[in-house]
Length: 474
Ligand SMILES: *Cc1c(COP(=O)(O)O)cnc(C)c1O
Image (cartoon, rainbow, N blue to C red; front, side, top):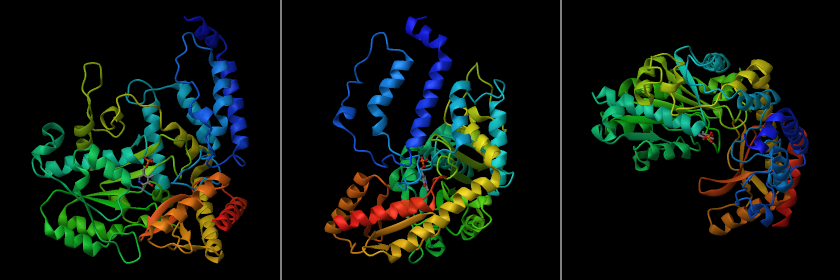
């Protein structure tokens, strides 16, 4: 063994202890750490692109990394990062995520270790948490983007099968163009259409209900009537990123009965609302969707690289047709819900379920529902204060955890966009709170998405203080 590696082998425990100490200092720094650190020229051009011949060993490498880069890391895991839809990691989830790397299982083969059985157990618990029926089968993928891709791939296969074509075998050209109908599809689904050969141009934007991002079921029906026999994917939203709008799923299910499309529900973060008795009604009907996307690394607060793709048991054989992987050294596919090698895009896959398993075990339904309910309460409070604060206004009523707001003089002009951008740079420089830009009804706005388990009333006060201070500067 190379002597540096041999030395690290002999001191493995000390190296993990050093990583643990570094981690604790990072966690302690979160409340004060910038939500958008200014990156120094030294960090961006640090000489790290020069390969070392013999290496310095893990201890020095860890120290070098931390000394050089620690202040370039944002507090995105902390309580005032409201940009995008970004969760943090609860203690149980983070501890489990570390163990995933140490244990290093390849959770694909049913005969190799107990890890696929634990993934199945995690999925079963998630179905209880979210009120999903037994007939929804799930598997872990890297994020909601991949869950959307997998879902649309199974939908594509199903639409082919209805017409006697096996797309997985023959290719999409054998089926011809698909129709894709949605009102507020997430950009990741549009990317997915490109990845799947369906094409971004296939997406037809259906009208929304007035003053809403939710699809207008009547407009959808009119669109379906135009080509009732065309193979069609309908991409429903259960929680849009701007206003957390939920499509009327019972109405869409009725249309599905009539027109026979594939109904996919993107519930990346909104799906977690089903864990709360107060909000579960927003998801009514999702139990019967053909496929569902739920992110774990957003509102379940597990570290990145975690989402669940659900499909009805009736479609499992189609999922295997798409993702089966044949080789002399692999188990042949079987139609069972834990046959992950043949159900997911990857060949090798980390033991991704463990952080969710651990969080469910550690905090239970009530503990995880409490995270989302607190975020919802704090979002309402944030919105009330924004409404009463000179210089700002809400762009939309707040449904759950996202506050969509703007400078009070926002209009559709380029100057207004530039002003909003200037404001956000000031806010980022202050580093107290991160909000990200958006546009709603042609007006340049900002979003504050509350997703983190640590966020408290004090954080809302600090965030509002920084917004006010930056408003005074533009
Ligand atoms: C975040 C998000 C996605 C993409 O999820 P990733 O986990 O970042 O791949 C898709 N859809 C919705 C509604 C989202 O909020």
